[in-house]
Image 1: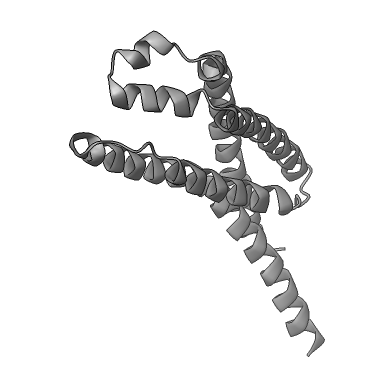
Image 2: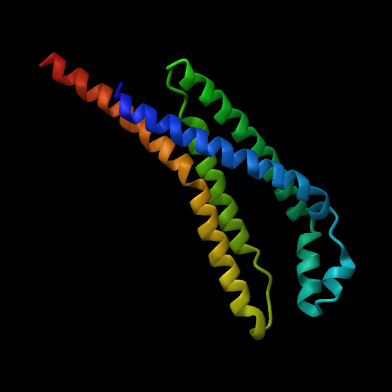
Length: 167
C-alpha cells in the first residue's frame, strides 16, 4: 500500500466529510421551505414566478429533494465510517465514492432538465444560474473524486509492487 496515496485519500475524505456535513445542515434547514414554498412570494414575480412555484411544488421535485437529503446524509455517514477505517490504517470501500459521484451526475442532469421555461428576458439569467450551480456542485464534489482516485492509486501501487517482487 502506497502510504502517500493513502494519506491523500484520508485528507480528501475528511474534506468530503466536512463539506457533506455542511450540506446536510443547510439542506435540513431549508427542507421545510422547499416542501411547502410560499406561494405569495412567487406570485409577486409574475408569470415566471408562478411557473417556478408550480415546479417547486410538484410531487416529483419534493420526492427528489427528500431523496437528495437522505442520500447526502447517508454519504456523510459512509464518509465518517471511512474516516474511522483510515484512523485504524485500513482502506475503506470505494463504493460510497462511486455512489456519490453517480448521484451528483443524476442531480445535475435532473436540475438542468427541469429548468423552468422562461421568456426571452430571463433566459440568460437561467442559463447563468445553471452554469454557476453546475460549477459549484462539481467543485464541492472534487474531494470525493480525489479520495476515490487516491484509493485506486494506492491499490494499483500494491499490485504493481507485488508483480515486481514475483519476477
